[in-house]
Structures are given as structure tokens and as C-alpha cells.
Amino acid sequence: MTHYDLAIIGTGSGNSILDGRFADLKTAIVERGTFGGTCLNVGCIPTKMFVHTADLAKTPSYSSRFGVDEDLTGVRWPDIRDRIFGRIDPIAAGGEEYREHHADNANVTVYHGTGRFTGTKELSITAADGSVRVITADRIVLAAGSRPNVPFVPGLAEVGYHTSDTIMRLGELPARLGIIGSGFVAAEFAHVFASLGVEVTLIARSGLLLRHEDTEIATRYTELASAAYDVRLNHDTVSACRLDDGSIGLETLSPGGRDEIAVDEVLVAIGRRPNSDLLDPAATGVTLDEDERVVVDAHQQTVVDGIYALGDLSSKYQLKHVANHEARVVQHNLLHPDEQIESDHRYVPSAVFGSPQIASVGLTEEEAVEQGVQYVVGRAEYAGIAYGWAMENTTGFAKLLADPKTGLLLGAHIIGPQASAILQPIIQAMSFGLDAHTMARGQYWIHPALPELIENALLDLPLAKG
Image 1 (cartoon, rainbow, N blue to C red):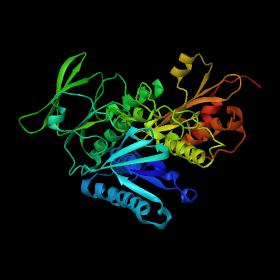
Image 2 (cartoon, rainbow, N blue to C red):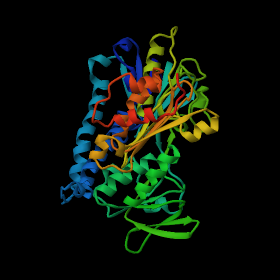
Image 3 (cartoon, helix red, strand yellow):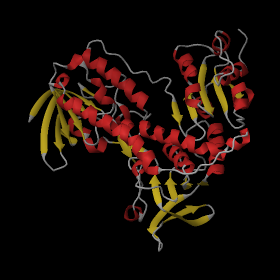
Image 4 (cartoon, rainbow, N blue to C red):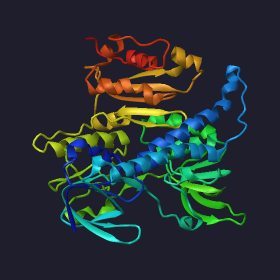
């Protein structure tokens, strides 16, 4: 058994904690998968590289209305895939090499395997070859992330399926892809594969895609997605089997009865679950909530003194920028135990990089009603601003919620081109307490540029006269 000053479980955002200020500490890093975590290897970065490629592939489908006749003459899937992972894989390998062999990490030991608590601040690490090492540490950071959630569907395991961890490394493009799910992972991959010429069928248990977004936004997205590919709402996948021609049959149950959908590959995209069950945190006294997330306080510390947690393992947001923020908080609190700071989760933004993009921050209208919060709404259409007019965008819009008396923004929701970038000024205004009138009239807005969408929505808010 080897004792450490600090142990970090997970090499995503947790890996960013270590810098020169920790050089004198004897540190262990534990990683069960590919070095670098979800975002780098199977999440944000590769998926957005595929999304950008899909955006390019989709251009010929609408360019003719601008007087430009284009054809998509081919999609070289191996080239697309290999370009993306040819850039990403060396980053993961380089990060691992740095931690294992660079002089900066002379006091760092990297363990490859699955860590599981076997006592108070005692961790058993099982490697791929079955060998086991046991370590202890004075302080521990739990940053073990999450993994795709897979439902039990009779026959699905036998016919085979993909998750977001594996779908991007397919050997070849399937002719038909069935996607089980209705959230952001399902939406983004539906856009990617449909744009590359795959016949996509999206199977949703709910009656709305992206149902956790503001209802107006989710409704518009569902309408647009249904026009782009086959969307089966209120369909529950009840079984899977291998058909006589070698394809996969997915049986679904809906209010209209039973259906069978034939596809060549299946993507399961129903969300992610924290990896807490792999850690057995109860063995060290760490508690979980009803969703199996590690419970932490505002300082990111668990109920066990000296054990911190961050990212998907403890956060309901499951967003890389949240994990990065929490990692900075943990880093500070490890370095300054007597001057601890708190995480700020007041205005957490999110985006869906589908077609079109969606971005949001703060309360939805439904949440405001449920919480009894007074609000007014301001709206603006892409078609009402110069650049939106140039793009001939007739479906995108922004929706803002504000306090009718103070003018402080309560929420913002955008659907349309570059929504994720356009949202950023709203996040800044909410974070620094800038009211809508001051934001709209206290600065220049570049004309003709897409942020004018926000300016118009701000001016549309029916606020009390100050």
C-alpha cells in the first residue's frame, strides 16, 4: 500500500488542477479510460468537429435559393473520421506522456485502472490485466465523470449498438441509422449523420425533442427536425432483433400501435449516468443523492473532510465549462484550505449544436411560472435583423425573460445560426447585474451583425419606466 498527499481520480478537468504549485506533493492520478476524459476524447471536441463538417455538407441543400447551385458529390467518411481523431488522439497521448515522464511531474504517479474505495481514503485500483494496487491519500479529488446510460431493451445487446463513445469511430457510414433518444446528444448526431447522407430515424419516448429547453424553443426545434429526418415522437423502443437481410429491426410502441423500423446501426443516446457506482464512495463515507451524484457543498467538498468532487460525477449540469469552473474552485481550496471559495452556479449556459443551434441560460418560461417569479418577455426574429435577412432565416428567434421592475435578465433562449456565440453577452449581463435597458442603450451594437438579435429582444421587453 502506497500513501500519497493527494490523489485525483479522473483525467478530464481533474487533470487541470495540478500545476507547479503542487510540485512538492506526492500525487497519484487514476484513469480507467483514455487520458484526457470525456470532452477531449468522446465529447465536446470531436463532436463539434463532426458538426462543423456536417454544416458544410448541408450547404448544398439550401444554397440554390441564394442563386448558388451546389451539389454534394461525395462524403469520404474515413477521411472525416481520421482527420478528427488524427488531431485528438495525439493530444490525449501527449497529456499522458507529460504526466508520466516530464520533469514537472517527478512526484506524480499515474495509475491506469478502475479505482474503487475499500476503506476511509483507501482506494483499490484494478488494471486491465487484473492486477490490483492499493493506495491511500490525505486528500482526494473525485473527477471520474460519467458514461452513456443504456436502457434495457430485449435483444439490443445481442444485435449490438453504439453510444456517443463509439459512434464516431465507425468503420463506414451506415445507409440507415436509428437513434434512440431525444436530448442534445441525439439531436447533434442526427444532424451529423443526416447531413452526411445517412437515412436517420430518431425514436423519442417524449412528445417533444429537447424537452428540457424552453417549450417554445423545443417546439420549433422539433418542427424543423421533423422536416429534416424521420422523427418518431411518443415511441418507446420495446425490442430489437436481427432481420433476415442482416439489418436491425427495432420494435416500437406508440399510441398508434406497434411499429418496426429497419436500420443498419443503432445509436443509444438517452443521457449519461455518473460513474459513482464504479467508485463505491460509501466505503469512504461519501454520500450520494437520489440520482447517484456525489453530494458536495459550495466549496465542492463532500461530507468527508479532504475529499472533493467535481464535474459530471457531482454536477447536474454535465457541462465541460462547469467542470472546468469547479476544478478551479477545488484547486484554490486545496492550495488555500483556510481561505476557501465557493462555486458559482447562478448563470450556467448551455448549447445544442444541432441544426439549428440552440443556446440558453437562466430560467425558462415554464420554470418562472412554476417558481412564481414575475417576468416579462421580449422577442426578436432573425428575419428582423439585417444579417438574418441576408441569410433568409425565417425560423430563428431569441426570447428573453426579465424582471418587470428592475429590468434584470432572468433567462435567455435562442434558436438559430451561431446561437451559442450570440448568447454570450447575455451571460455577461446576468453575471454582472446589468439591466436590460442599460445593456440595450449603454453600448454600441455592431451593424449589421447577428448580435443585433439580442439588442432587438432587449428593446422588446415591456419594462416599467424608471
